[in-house]
Figure 1 (tube, rainbow, N blue to C red):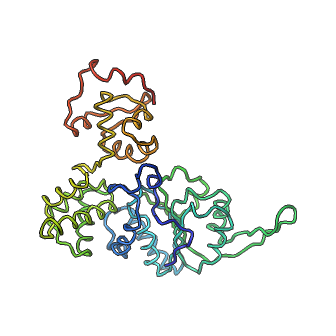
Figure 2: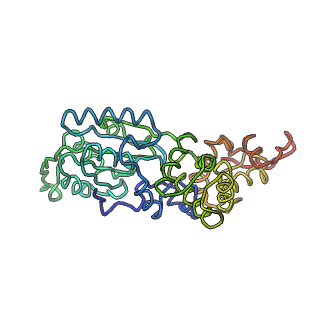
Length: 367
């Protein structure tokens, strides 16, 4: 396996990891830091049989790979979309392993010029898998070069400048491109259409996360009871990466404070220490909800005003906290601003104001 030297530290780079306010270091953040990458390397499943969840994508991908092996050729180009931490990088490695091919890993932001991409493509061997993470963030000149490389296994290298510039065709060996994106809508249609298989990664159900946690606990040599795994799974936001991170923190707590066995009580106590509540909300999430409900009567309130109220940047609230709160049905975005739902009042144990008696100032704020 080859890691391109220009690849960022986070192979599943998420926008939230680069936001101000330390959002990238959240315990329930889906982006991976250096410690996560080291542990994930040991916990990653090696084949489709070990991979937990994503049943439809696994079944479809298994057919694609088996057919390619029977033909004795390379697999079709694969596009994987979905939120960070759901297993896109892991599946790319499994594709390479199933095809018995090496894998090279890089990312869209690392490819700023067509020459960067040409250098990578020209060094590929036949059948090699090229994993291009955050493919939607690749530069436009490199993107246009990729069209021809994917379709004709050829690139034109421009030598010289101005009227004297010459295009030298460079033949490429057949290879498989695995593109990953957290924002499939930003991919231009010509690029999307060149992928032979497209799979969308869904968030995991609690039962699937329990299987992930039990498997990781065995690899980490941690004793965990079924109730303990269920407690961690319920706070993992449907994301295996978060589940594994919480498992490691609970393991530390159980080792120091108890006998090393993770029970439901130990898991709940440990995650309370780390400010992760029963629905997976952390300090930032609860601060946003608390400000929305207590200061503005449940809204509507503008995003900038809400960000000031919690002492965070606007982008941090919008890109880090809001997506999960909206997905959980605790917060809604409206043309007039953000509003708290009845589930939000219930989760924080607050009583919503009577109509017309609370949140009168919120009408001043626009989204």
